[in-house]
Each structure stands twice: as C-alpha cells, then as structure tokens.
Amino acid sequence: MSVSPRSGTFTTGDAVDLAFVDRNGFVESRHLGSAVVVDPAGEVRLELGDTTTPVFPRSSLKPFQALASMQSGAPLVGEQVALACASHVGSAEHMELAEQMLHAAGLTEDHLRCPTAWPQHAATRTALTRGELEIGGRTLDAAQSRLSFNCSGKHAAFLWACVENGWDLETYLDADHPLQQRVVDIVEEYAGEKIAHLAVDGCGAPVPAISLRGLARATGKLAAAPSDKSSNARAATIATAMLDYPWAVHGHGEENTVVMEDLGIVSKLGAEGVLILGAPDGTACAVKMLDGNGRGATLVGLTLMAAAGVIEANALGPVLAKTQKPVLGGGEPVGNVRLAAPVVEMLD
Image (cartoon, rainbow, N blue to C red; front, side, top):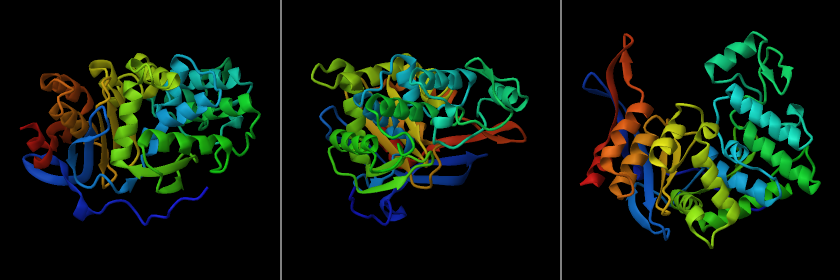
C-alpha cells in the first residue's frame, strides 16, 4: 500500500483556542485545536483552525472499521455491531459480548492481537484481580486480559470477517491484509479524499490519516444512513446500533453513551483529543485537540453542533452536567473546563 508521507498534523500557529481550564477564576491550561461542522451535503458550515491538514482519527474511525468487517461478511447483529465500534471500559458486559462474538466465529481470546489490559470498569477490575471474574462460563486468571482492552470488540469483528473469508488470522492487522485494505477503501470513500499517511494505532491496527473535513464528511454520511434509502444498509445498521446500544460503545454513564442516549446523535471519541458527532440529518462535527487531551472535546463539539442548529441550546446543559468533570481542589469543585472565545462566538 502506497501513501504520501506527512511530517505531522497542523501546528499551533494554525490552531485556535477551543477550551481552557478555570481554577478559582484563573486560567490554568489552554487547549488549542481545530474543529469543523459540515452540512448534510458535506460542505463546511462552521470552521475553526486548520481543518484540511491530516490528523489521525484514532478510535473515532471504529464505525468505519466495523463497516469493513461487516462488508467482508462478519454477521454482526445488535449489540455486537455497537461493540465493534466501541472504545469500551471493559465491563463484564463488554467482555462477555466480545467473548460471544469470538465463540460464534469459532475462536477464543487467544486469537486476539490487541494488547492486554486491566478493565477500566472498577467492579470488573476488582473481580478480575481477585480471580473471581467469570466470562463465557470460565473463570479468568487474575491477570490483564485482551477481552478487557477497549478495542476487543473491533478486533473480534475483524477476526470474524477473516473466518468468513478464509483469510489469515495471524496477520489480520497487517496493512496489506485484505481486510485492512478494505478499511482504507471505505475511509477514502466516506471521507471523499485519499488518506495521507498510514500508521499503527495503539491497538496494533493500521490507522489512516485524513483531514478533519474528511472525517466530518464520513461521519455525516454514516449518521444519515438510516434515513437515506440510497445509503449502504450496513452503514445504516451501524449508526442505528450505536444509538440503540450506546452502553456497548463506551459504558453505562460514560461520555459517548450519555450523548447518544440523551441527544440521539452518533458520538465517538478517539485518542489524542479527537471526537466525531453525527446528527440523523447528516450534519456532522469533527474536533481535534492539538495537545491530545480530550477533556474539552465533547463540550466544544456539542456547542458547535448547537451553533449549527442541530441541537437545541437548552438541551446542552443537562448533557454537559453529566459528561464534564469539575476541576477539584481538596476534593471539592473549584473550577471547570470552559469554552474559549472563538467557540463562544460561534453561538452569536
């Protein structure tokens, strides 16, 4: 696979202030970045900073990787589809569902090539460390597990697609593997642009670099698929499953889950400060925090979607109250993450 090499993403000089951390009325930290909202036709509606230089979408690409698995024959249904798109917290529910997917494909956890991890979900982590966690009818060893790694659903879907096609299981993460080539084709199709670079993601899978505009266009097409009779049926299934089973995409009470439950828009965080949001009409937002810290991404993204008119402004407060963590001092709230002026001005 040949792609044009890039030295990096946009610079601080091409970024804008998106959010800042307020501690007792003092600006402690600033988050620079870029963000874009596109309309249902994929045209730019709102824009801040450089949105044409490539970024790594990281886990915000998972819905499109899941689409590649499904188009390659992985017979995912319901919660399985949502888990294939997930950056989950490794709850027992998540781990059980990943195990079920592997079992249905005639495989086990040992076939996964993602790293091992302790569950982020506290109760599940405690049970696992005590040797008391039962998954798939067996008690797991008190050790890190591949099932609890946040990408295990995506990898289970990858493997299932390989089984259906007779593709090699050992090399399913190689860039020249047929499945990963299909991922690139789908990303380019939905983004409407060629990828600029190909790297290795934290889970070991290839991750292509595209622009924020391309990422937003892709998100809009996916989010609008359920109401677009001309769209890909599996894309419609993915968008529907994410909204029907948001807990599987992230976790009960987690950021993406709350946004999808309360607002009915597709929401997917990616590492290094990336976020995508997609409304049912195809309006979509893509955000990249340049410093890689995503704590203000949902605040910024939802505000821009409200500025674009696809979210009622009065609906933001309750959602942000659930998703935004306060700045603490001595265990008590002393501040918060707030919008920077360029974002606030979009609301005027």
